[in-house]
Image (tube, rainbow, N blue to C red; front, top):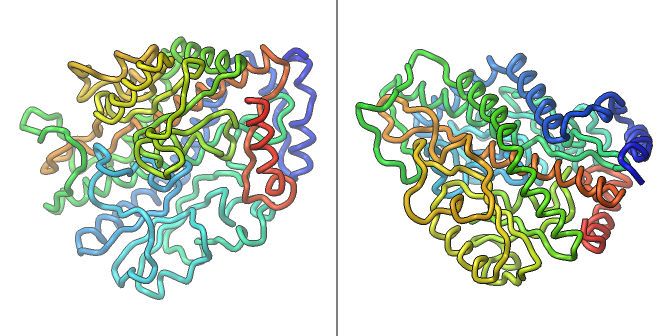
Length: 456
C-alpha cells in the first residue's frame, strides 16, 4: 500500500467517533515534510498563547516573585512533557532556585504558591491553606474543551475551581496534533513545548522583577559566574516576550539541520525493520527517556535507558547489541555520565546519535564530548546555559535546550513515521491518551503490546 492510497483510511472516522474535529484533507496532502508541518502547528499554538495569555503570564511572574521575596514556597505541578520535572531536573543549568517540583499538600502553608495543571488525585482547595494557585489545562485532567471524553476519574481532576489566576495553553484532550494516514490516534505531543515555553516565560520575568527589588536568585548548573563583560538585560523590559521570540527562532533553525534529522530517522527505521531495537537514553529518567516512553501521541517502538531512575531501565541493566541504535538526549555536551555510557556503546559497536546542545556559552566543548563522538549530532541551534544575564544574578537563567531537545526528538519521530509508511505501507502504532474513557483507555495496553510485537 502506498502513502497516497493510505490517506483515506482510519483517521477521519476515528476522529469522528471520538467527537473531534476532522483534520483538513489539505493538511494531509501537504507536500511539506511532516516534521515541518508539526512545527507549523506548534508555532501557531504558541502564538495563540502569546496573543491571549501574555498579560496573565506576566501577572503570574509578579505573584511568583512576590512569593519568593516574602520567603514562601513555590511548588510546581506544571506539565513540562511526560514529567513535571522534564526541564527542571536536578542541577538543571539555568534553572533558578524558585520552584520545588511537586506539591506536598500537608506541608503547604499560608503565603505559598502552586503552579499546577497536571496531577494524579483530586485536590482539596489549596486556598484554604492560604496558597495562591496559578492553574492551566492539561490533557490528563478535566479542564480541556473535550474533557467529557475522559474517564470519570480524570474529569474530576480539576484545578480551575481553585485557581486565582488561569494560564490557558489551549491544549486539546487528545494532547497530540498530527494525523497519520491510517492512524487511530494523533501523533506529536505538544504539552512539553507549550508547558516549558510558558514556564520559562514566567521564570524570566520573575527573576527580573526580583532583581529590580535587589533580590537575587541562585541559579543551578556549572556556568562560571558572570562578570562585567556579560550582556546584561534591562530590569525594565519584560523578558517573557524575549524568551518567546528566541524560542521561536531556535525552533525555526531546526530546519537547517533536517539532514541530521534524516540520518537519525533513517538509521532508526532501518534498525527496527531489520529486527534491532531503538533505545532512547538520557542521564535522568525524567528527561528524554521519559518523554519517549509510552507517551500520549508517541511511537511504540522505543526502549528507555538512563543512569538514574527506575531500576528496570538503568544503564547497568542495558543489554544492547550491535544490531541496535541509541539516541542520546543530552543537556550539556560533556556530562561525565553521558560520556561513560557512550564509551559502553562504542565498545559494543552500537550506532549512536545525540540530540541536544553542543556548546557552552556558544563555544564548542574542548576535549571529550558527546556531539563530536556520536555518529550524528542534532542540536547546533541551542546552548547548555540560560539565555538571560540578569543584573545581580551570577549565572544566566532560562535555558532553551529542554524545549529544543523535545522538538528535535519529535522531528525525528515524524520522519521515522513517514519512512515506515513509505517502506512498509503500514502506519506505526501511536499511543492514545490513556485518560480517555472507552476504546483508547481500554486498548492502551493492546496498542503497546502490538507495537512491541511488530516492532513499530
